[in-house]
Image 1 (cartoon, rainbow, N blue to C red):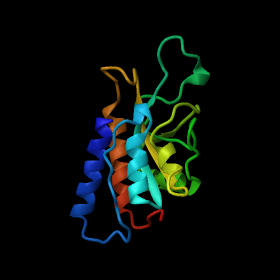
Image 2: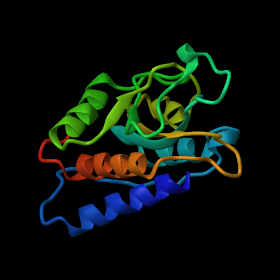
Image 3: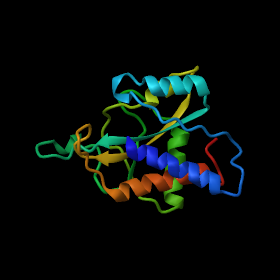
Image 4: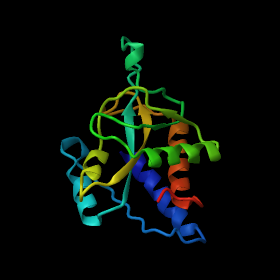
Length: 174
């Protein structure tokens, strides 16, 4: 996801421009092939051997005509999505609670995923090198995987703010 790459660049700039030491190493992996086997994320995780993995992703909003209310995953424009599980990953509870506390402390708009569906790179990161704690933030996306997804810019700003706070926060999850 190109917006995920842009958000990671914002994280890198925030760390570079910060005057304090983070107390932990940060690695950024701009991977590919998520839709055809997760090979990029798996290779990166096995090479880096992280304690934590953090994925920035889009999530199908499922709000088009005819979709039953109970299958609507999230709401376009209601902020970044924080998920506790999907079809391939159970996210680390303390990591996800930390993301929620970042949102609440910094008045960042967020929503919880309302329906378990899909998967992403976090599943292979989680299962690599003996197990890795993973966290995820997503943007609600209408017409996902098409040539013209629709997202709300405000949701992307919320994701950026969470991601930057994650790497500059006084109390990291680690």
